[in-house]
Image 1 (cartoon, rainbow, N blue to C red):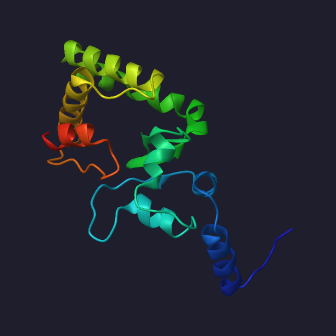
Image 2 (cartoon, helix red, strand yellow):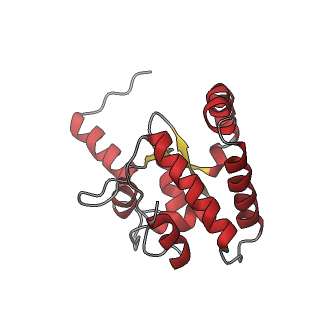
Length: 173
């Protein structure tokens, strides 16, 4: 059976589907991924996408969903993206495929830096009320420096809602 609809009906259907207000996890259920572009000429992409779809959304609200509630995470999907945490198992093939590059260019080149960063991440993950100490701040600076090099980027944008000590440590990268 073939369904025939007019172009105007298709436009209304797509606009309704993509722009019916929902909550932040609902946006990721509909879209699957949201490209993360840190450039901010008029607003960063995740903020613009989410402001158009989530009533009451404020700039950087996605960070709480990613780093506190952990319902989304940043991943690579042709570009840097935010994806639902429920996609983690489906992305195993991508992680496996890129592991040789990751291991060679990141893990083997700086084993002490990797150990430092992973230790700090583990502490921060399992102790969410943890106040960032000198060890964690050093690990964050190390990770950010390497991440900028990996991306061939020259700057890091840190939101105002990020802990001041963390923001100050990352601003010096």
